[in-house]
Amino acid sequence: MRLVLIDDHPLVLQGIEVVIQGQKDMEVVGTASCGEVGIKVLQDFQPDIALVDLRLPGEYGLDIIKRARKIAPQCRFIVLTSYSDRADIKRAMSEKVEGYILKEAMPEEILNAIRLVDKNRTYIDPVIMQILLNQEKDDPTEQLTPREMEVLEFLAMGMSNRNIAEALFVTEYTIKKHVSQILEKLDLADRTQAALYAFSKGLGPPGSASIAN
Amino acid sequence: MRLVLIDDHPLVLQGIEVVIQGQKDMEVVGTASCGEVGIKVLQDFQPDIALVDLRLPGEYGLDIIKRARKIAPQCRFIVLTSYSDRADIKRAMSEKVEGYILKEAMPEEILNAIRLVDKNRTYIDPVIMQILLNQEKDDPTEQLTPREMEVLEFLAMGMSNRNIAEALFVTEYTIKKHVSQILEKLDLADRTQAALYAFSKGLGPPGSASIAN
DNA sequence: CCATTTTTCAACCTTACGGTGGATGGAAGA
DNA sequence: TCTTCCATCCACCGTAAGGTTGAAAAATGG
Image (cartoon, rainbow over all chains, first blue to last red; front, side, top):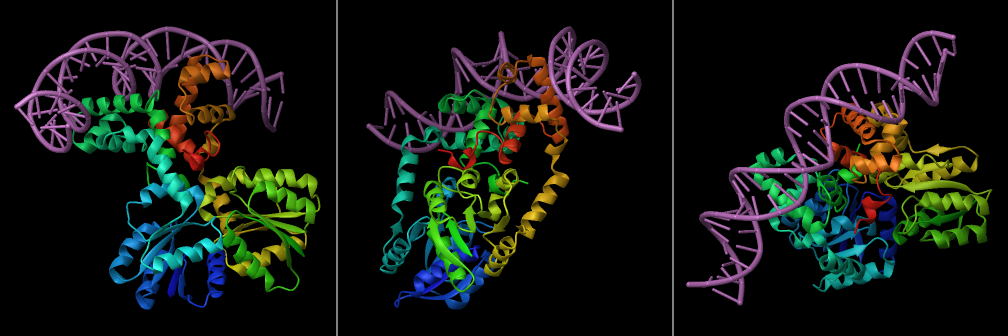
C-alpha cells in the first residue's frame, strides 16, 4: 500500500508516519502540509490511499479531494478530522469519501481503517457515525424546508430582510414569512438568536468562526 | 529535562514523543489525553516542563494550567495551539505561561522553545506574536468602553435591549444608547451583525462555537 | 481642581421586525 | 384525483430597534 499524507501539522504528520513505519504492508510515499502541494504530490506519486486533514490553510480539505479525484482517480481518500470540528463534519458528508477517522482515535484504529479501505470497504469512525445519527435525530434544523435553510444562512451573515429578498429575487414579504417560520420552528425569539444559532452550526460565512479577524 | 505531554490527539502525542526521543537532554516521563488525567500525571511526575494543548475535551487547557500551578509549582508550561484557534489565543494570554507554540511549527522550533523555557526564558511563536500585535493594532473592539463591551457580550447571547437593561439594572434607554455607540464604533448595521461579530471573537456563551449541538 | 470621558436617563421620530390571517399556484405523493 | 406541503405575495398591526439630540451625574486623570 502506498500512502500520501496531507496535514498542516508537522507533528501529526510525524505521528502518522511513525505509526505506519511499523507496518510492512504500508509505505508513506509522500506528504504535504497544504492543498496546493498536496495536489502535486498526489499527481506525482499516484498513491493507493491518501489521508487528508479536513482543515487545511486556505481551502477546505474537501475541495482538495474533489480536485484530486480527477488527477488521481484510483486513489481512495480518508478524511482526518478532529472531534471539535464536528460542526463541519455534516457538511463534509456531501463529498463522498472512503473513510473518516478522528485524530483523537488510537493509532490502531487508523491502521484498521487503512486496511479496510484498501479492501474497497468504507470506514467511518463510530464516534462520527454517532454524531451524524444524533444530529439527524434531534437537530431542529431538520424541520426546516430547503428554502428556509437558505434564508437561515443569510440570517447567519447578518443580512436584513430586504437584502435577503434582493439576493433571492423575491419580495420582502416572502422573506418575512420565512423568518417567522424559522423562528417558530426553532423556538427562537428573533433573527439575532437565529443568526447565532445558525452560526454556531457552521453556517454563515465559511470558516469565519475560526478565521475571524 | 523531564517532560509531560497533554494532548487529546494520540497522533500529536506520538509525533512529539518521536521528536523528543532523538534528544538526549530530554525525556518524556508522562502523557495524558485529557485534563483530569493530566493533573494527576503532573502531580505524580512533577516534571520540569509540560506541553499542554489549548483545546482539550471538557475544559479549556488554560483552566488545567491554572489548577496545575498549585500542585506542580516548579513546572513551566508551554501551550500548544493550532493556527485556526487564533480566536482563542487572545483569551489565552490572560493566563501567563512560559511558552506558546503552534502545531504548524516545525519540530526544531518546538525543541528550540523547550530549551529556551528550560533556561528560564519565555518563548512565543513569532506567528502568534504577530497575530497578537495585529489584533491589538486594528481591533475595533479596542475602541469600546468597558460598559459597551459588557453590553456587546449580552448582544452575543441574543438578548433584547429590555433583557439586557434588566440584567444590568439600568433603563432600556441606556442600553439603546450603548448599542448605538457600539454599532457606530464597529461600523455595523444592526444588533445581529454585532452579535455575530462578537460571537466570532469568542464572546457569547463560552465555547459554544465548538461545543454547539 | 478642572477637563474629559463615561455612564446614565429622556424625548422624538423613522424604520425594521415579528405576529396574524389570508390567498394563490405548483409540485409531490397517496 | 385529491390532499398536503411548499413557496410566493399581500395587508394590518403592535412593538422593538436604531438615529438624533440633549443633558446631568459620576468617574477618571492630569
